Image (tube, rainbow, N blue to C red):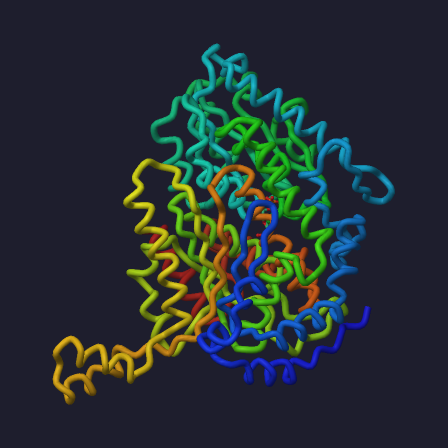
Amino acid sequence: MTAPSTNWSALAEQAGTVAPMRTLFEGDPDRLAKHTLEAAGLVLDASKNRVDDGLLAALFDLARASKVESRRAAMYAGQKINVTEERAVLHVALRAGRDASYRVDGHDVVPDVHAVLDHMEAFVAQIHDGTWTGHSGKAITDVVHIGIGGSDLGPRFACAALYGWRRAGLTVQFVANVDAQAIDDATASLDPATTLFVIASKTFTTAETMMNAHTARDWSLAGGVPEGELHRHFVAVSTNEEAATKFGIDAKNMFGFWDWVGGRYSLWSAIGLPIALACGMDRFRELLEGAAAMDAHFAGAPLEANLPVRLALMGIVNANLLGARSVCIAPYHQHLELLPAHLQQVEMESNGKSVDLDGLPVSHRTVPVIWGQPGTNAQHAYFQCLHQGTEWAPIDFIAVIDPTHAHLEHHRALLANCFAQSEALMRGKTTAEAKAELVDAGEDDAEAARLAPHKTFPGNRPSNTIVLQRLDPASLGALIALYEHKVMVQGAIWDVDSFDQWGVELGKVLARSIVDELKHGASGTHDASTAALIGRAKKARTA
Ligand code: F6P
C-alpha cells in the first residue's frame, strides 16, 4: 500500500493565512452553524478553531485523499486493517444489535457477541439476586476487577462515569498496578468469603495481571476459601481459555472475546463485566446502544457532517498545521475525571507511531500528548499557561447540560466556567484593551502601561466543546465511540497502523531480565545509570 503523499507544508501555509478567530466570528454570521454538528445525542461545537471555509474544504480533500472512507469501510467489513498483527478491527460489532451482521473471515460474529452478552446477563443477575454465593453460602458483596491497560482503563472509567447508576449492595474496585499497594488497599477491608475477583486479560499472560491474580488467589486461600471452592470467587474475561483454565478458572465462569477486539477498544466486550456488575446489565446495554448510535453516524454520514471526522480534522489542524504538541481534555463533570486517562490509552497507544503502513518513517507528526483534569480544578492549576504561556494546547471541553445532582447554583457556576474558558481562549485581550481597563479602574497612565503586558491575552487559542444533554450510559457510550472513531480517521490521515502497540514490548522484555537480577542478584549488561539504579535496589533489599 503506498502512502498518500500529503503536501503538509502547503496546508500549513494555508492555515497560516486564516484570519484570527475573533475576525472570523465577526465576519461570518453562519460560522457557528457551519461548525456545529450533532449526532447520537452529542453536539460538537468546533467553531472555535483556526479554520476558515477554504481550509475546511482543503481538510475534507485531505481526508478523501487519505482514503478515510475506504479505510472506514474496510473496518466495518471486517478486513484486517491491523496489518502488523493481521487482525480485523471490529469493536463496532460488540455494540451491534442482534439483527446486525459483521463478518470476520466469512463468519458472522454478532451471534457470538450476543451469546457472551447473554452469559454476562445471567451471571450478573445471579450476583445481584444473591443466588451466586461464595464458599460459605453468603452472597457476593464486593467485586475486585484485576486487569491493566485496556483491560482496566475502559471499565474503570465507565464505572466512575456512571457512578450515579451504581447499584446498592455491591462495591466494585479495580486493581491494575503491579505495585502490591493497589491490591493490598483494595482488599484491606474485604471479606474473602464475600469477594469475587474478575481476572481480565485478553492474553492472560500480562505480567502485572497474572501477578495480581496469584496474589488475589493467595489472599483468598489465606482468608479461608477452600481451594476446591475458588471457582465461586474467581471468574475470567479473556480470549485465552487455555491459560485461564490453567490458572484454575472453571470454563463455565469464563467470558470470552476475540482477537479482533483491541485491548483499548474492549470495554464493550466482556471486559465491561464490572460495569454491568456495578450498574446492571440494562445500563451496560444502554452504553452499547449509545456507542452503536455513534457507529451508525460515523459509518453513514458524509465526511462534511461527520462528528468523528470533524473532531479528527480539527486535531490535524492543531497538531500538523499549527504545531500543537499536546491536547488538553477538560471534562466539566466530576464523574468524567478518568476520561483523560482513558483517552490517553485510546489515542496515544493507537496513533503513537512513527512509521507508516509500509514501515517507512513518516515525515509528519502523529498523535500529540493527551492530558487533562476536570474543570474547574484544571483552571486553578495550569490554565494560566494555556492562556498566556508560550506553550499552548488545544482543548476539548466536555459540558453536560443537566446536572446529576440537585445543586443548581453549583451547576450554573460549572457551566459558566466551561463556556467562559473557551471564550477567553478564543477572544484573548489586546494590550490596548488591558490598558484601557486599568485606566478605567483608576490606575494612572504609567502604572496602566506597566501592568498591561501582564494582563494581555494573545487569544486565538483553539478549542472544541462537546455537549452532552446529560451524562448517562447512552451518552457515555456515544462519547467514547466518538473518540475511538476520531482515532481511526487520524490514523488513516497519518497512514499508521492504529491498532497495534509494539512500542510497549521493549520495556516489558527489559523488565523481565531486571526482575531476575533483583531476585537472584545476577548482573546484567546495562548503561551506568540503569546499573546504578538496580544496584541501589539490590543494596536496599540486602539491608
Ligand atoms: O500495554 C500493552 C497492552 O497490550 C495493552 O494494549 C492492553 O490493553 C494491555 O497491555 C493489557 O493486555 P491484556 O488484556 O492482554 O492483559
